[in-house]
Amino acid sequence: MSYAVPPIIRLSERLLVDVEEAVKVFPRRHKYVFGSDLRRAAMKVALRAQRAWRKPRDPAKRIAKLVRAIDDFKLRLQLGSAIRAFASFGQFEALARLAKDIGRQAGGWMRRHQQHPKSQNRAAGAPPERAQTLSTCAASRHTGANA
Image (cartoon, rainbow, N blue to C red; front, side):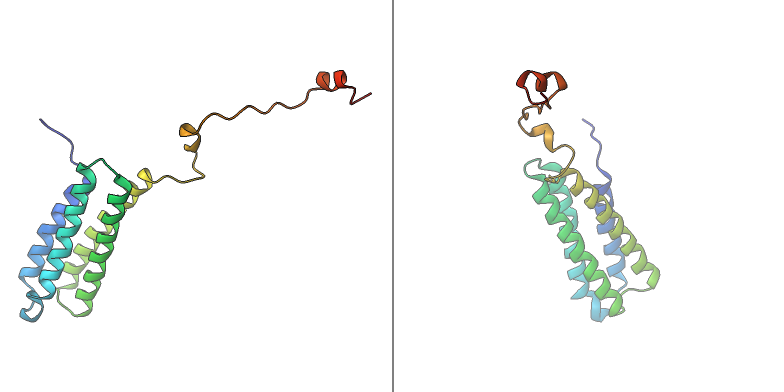
């Protein structure tokens, strides 16, 4: 049985691997506390992405949780850059770009599943409205309105 894995799942799995490689070379003072926090945040992103994809019930809620997890991960990345935990700026930049791509995918996913009150598709699920008929010239002659 084959199925197409969405790009966000592949990206989140790659994020896990790249974070693991980055944490390996962290300085000792950042490796155990900050490194484990960053790993946990990346794992949360991957798990939330899997759950949003595999569990069809209430996708908007699951995707919102995924977006929050991505935002939390990005915040931790910024902190890591500020405390100079990464071996190089290039390593930080690669992780930041990957997180940005995952965020872009999640944003598109969220827009697809959100219900906007003024959307074009709102009428598709709404009950049909009664057609409005405007008076015609012939109709107004019969009532004596133009006489």
